[in-house]
Image 1 (cartoon, rainbow, N blue to C red):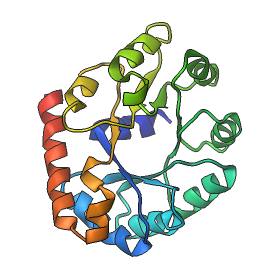
Image 2 (spheres, helix red, strand yellow):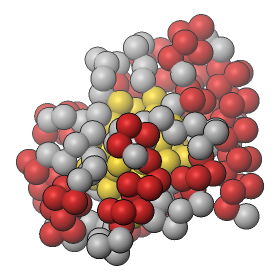
Image 3 (cartoon, rainbow, N blue to C red):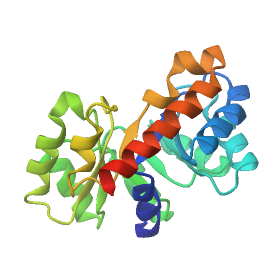
Image 4 (tube, one colour):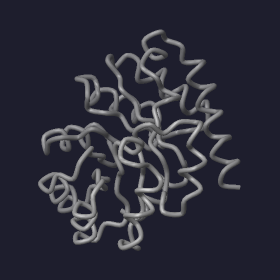
Length: 212
């Protein structure tokens, strides 16, 4: 789990991807890799998620691909069988978390309250998701949660963009951020993968400028 957290942290930003059609998986992966960000969290908000993950891993075996918005154990199994290397859930679902830990599947559960963070700490976790970040106070809330739970770091997702990315990544309690601004649904639907690659490259440079 620590190795996976280190890999995720190295990117600074993890693109949160929603694909309506698996045919877009390869060109999207092409665009992300071309832009310098060979990772993605493919959300299970659509029926295309499982096949999209499979295609991305087949085309780019070294690409770090995870599954997001995972709400059931069945989805965990589908995602992992398709090649997902980590699981992200929007909330702290004890059944899903315990299942993943038993199977030694890296998981980042959503935690926005002290009670939820406490459950993560109880299980020996040191990185959790913070979602939806902006709606629940962003960086200031994360700092407040991290104060008593000194061993925990966060991956904020929800409302993160180029305007506030510096605020987030400047906080030492944040390992990376989940963001969708470089992989917006309208760009995918329009087939504008060149623009996605351009926005991805800009995100990579922004992360470098913040963390240098």
